[in-house]
Length: 391
Picture (cartoon, rainbow, N blue to C red):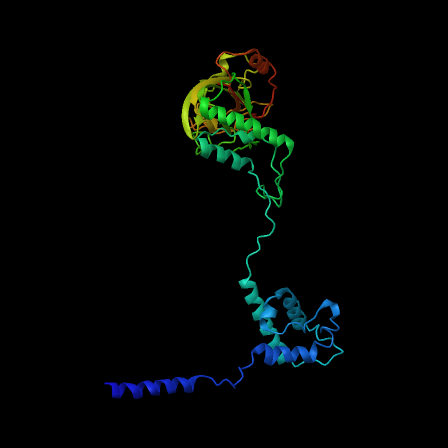
């Protein structure tokens, strides 16, 4: 075994020695040494060397690819000048296009590699505060109560249409005062519960509406009344859980002899209570129509704290009308409707004044302010809505 092993070992050593480069053979030149440096020497060093360095640019100091990669901004500028044809200048000897393309491709690869290896630059980091929505959500997530203290904060600054940019959100002294007040409110509520509040009276205003006249008999319509233009819709935030009294005040007119209408209170998309309203029980200045202006009904309901969708609608609006054509000779026709039971259609030009109303949510006992508000109700043929809320 020893006689066979020794010659094999000797042959392996000889083979490795034959593959090893000779100390006298120089390494192969790089692309920078073979292409880029000669190009720079022929077309760039006359103006941009260590001695002249026009435009404060010295290309002769870059003697290796590592030096080029260490200054990518300078070589990105060189690349732009080469590709645009600005350099070399027109009064100098122009290099061959293929030489320019070869050098430009090499510079582009080196600059891209340097950019990829460089650490990311996030820019200047500014101190950022929470906007009002974020503040409310943070308080809710921390203590589990939807107190919404930021609703009392000043309006957030905006930039480019956003109110979440840290450089735009300022911190004025009045906001700092609101922060301290909110901290007191939130901490007290989280430990001791909400502070008792006085009964309040709050008026709510829905979006503007327009009741469109119609001379076409309405037999197929939303009988809940929620999608009709005379319905009242509003989103309101209830500050605490309590029993509330909601006063719905109607408006508009209906033909004399019509059956009483109904008003339905909806909370968060569910019907809560329906009350009947008969305007003929009250005094009126007209004998040929029912006037709903200033007349209303009261609802009582329990509301939890938070934002609720409150709606009041008139269901079956086009039912319960007196039989026969509803016209008043010499005056405007007053109602565009049909009585489904009798099949009587409306008159030409009718449909000017649909019954509608407004909502007021008041304490159970009528207050002086409420009685004065009813007296100040203006006479208008169009439906108007408002809302007032009190626990």
